[in-house]
Length: 376
Length: 127
Image (cartoon, rainbow over the protein chains, first blue to last red):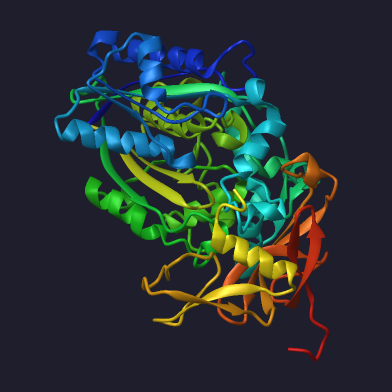
């Protein structure tokens, strides 16, 4: 069995004077302190990628920088799903007996080091170089296409999407490290600058600096947080090659993770779902089983995803308001879920959650990882 | 990247000539738009074909925030996913104001070194 034995992070936002490595080191040191482990106990390192530090061997680069000589280390790339994919792999490596304490770490200074223009241009390259990029799309444009289809099929409007931006901002307000905390309304979202219709500025996650880290261990910490289930699905890479923008087939992925954990939907009391855009949340919540198709916004309005609701969602504020620092942005959902399960979420703490469901999305609904975390 | 993929170059040369080229599998008959030396469905060899250029808008977005300075000079512009009648889907530019379900016809618009496919609404009565 594999356990999350410690978590750590930096604030998200503009962090001048930092590098990806210094940010990663800050989060890693915090995770080690949280776990009560020394550097020498770390025998595995998994990391993602950093926009400002392209490198063939980022895990080894970081290990040397941080003062580690692990028996297992490499980087991993699955876009926004990288954080969840690293946790899944770390759990499998622990289960296989390969490592006893894997450090999973990611950090990026894309806001201060790359700038918004540079980040937007880099990220657009996830599209097909011959059959998409020549038309000048951006990541918001790819998701704008997805949103247009979703709204057409389900007869929903831009206000239905906007509700999720408002909820994420409300949740971020209670996190001391969140990038955006000022309250917003649905009207604010609808009035924000158009980016890629139907998505406006406040439907889109920001560009942030920041880092997150966690330790996946063969021995539990206190309390005992088990990685109880994990599954992946990779239906396509490019939005223009997706079979059906109204059904990415993720019910199966979520179902396999819950089956491995031996739980059903009703056992879940906390959600941490990738939210690169408002539309991402609606689709992922519905496909992974937390709302009927087309009904995620209706469930939100009924209070289901609020901090005191049936399924509190992204209590740190998600990518949309806590911030999006590349791989660390996706890892932040997992750090927050672990803190909630451990009862260490401070003012954000929801009532005694035991079981969290997490889902990461990379590319344009391209790479998916579902996770189940349980306090035992 | 462009120019290094000979199959993609053949597609873009078609655009220069006013042809929307795609692949049709010689084995299973599937249409394939992202050109490959094999059919991604069955593995058999595809053959090139030319589309009539008629299709239906599947998804649409209007880009107001461009990815690069070149495109920033053109905003806003509409990007579509179009389902072509021959059974493949592609990304392209669209005339302003197209909506999902509109019947459209392809044209080609000069943009830098490429002739970019751009769809316009079919007149009523045309199919």
